[in-house]
Length: 317
Picture 1 (cartoon, helix red, strand yellow):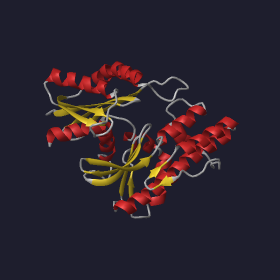
Picture 2 (cartoon, rainbow, N blue to C red):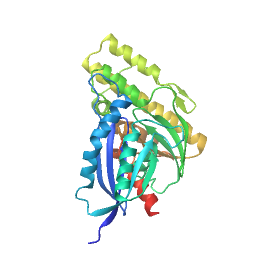
Picture 3 (cartoon, rainbow, N blue to C red):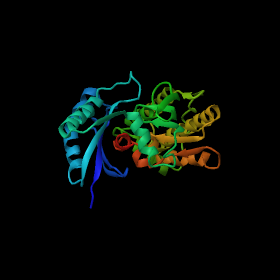
Picture 4 (tube, rainbow, N blue to C red):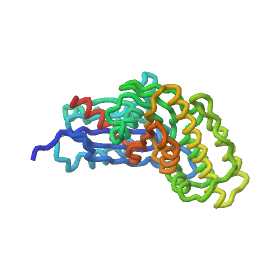
């Protein structure tokens, strides 16, 4: 049996070390991820601490990805910056980039470099109804990013999003106040799906054109938590926060579709892995001309699959 050429993908975001392998048929052979450790009560990591954890995790993950694959590595692909613009930079991506360069030199194979955001988009798009589409709207919703993007081929333009903190930060900061371990998105989703009703503690998220402000909602939630709430009220507050986020996304989507004339809307980033948001957005748009697609939600959060797919496309095009 003839073996297939392989591409190794590496992504070192601020909260996860990820390694993936795809073959020449575009199939994902490996999808390995290790979350970075955040101390209890803290709301994030310093870049130096994240960088150290990536350097600790990468050898083992790459060793596991390489072992037992019946094929020849033909290229390595890596994320080197947050966004595909010249000014975009974060130290954590140097961990993956440096390891990728070593892998490339050791095997005498090419290395392809992309942005973390391009990888996010491709991971979900490749497993969605948008595969092959060149032009669409896309939400990149994660712990540090909440952007509404206009995508046209390789051109990615920010047309909306949040003016202050991200949706993920609003969730994580409130969750830590409630005693949850960071990150809190998964727990918020589980509670929202089970909670019978929501509270009425919060105002709607203000929408200004294609942008929103979230710090006001975060401050309201912090005051509610600080004043003391019962366990049942905590669940209701969590559900209300997710509902307010869903309501803001509906308004932004309606306005973006009206302004751009583009009715295809892709969702990616860790916040987009929420089953509750998936249900809320589909409930609003399934009977309309707006086509919202979350793809494979398991690929919404940080991973190296999209980076590997992009590298394979460049290698085999």
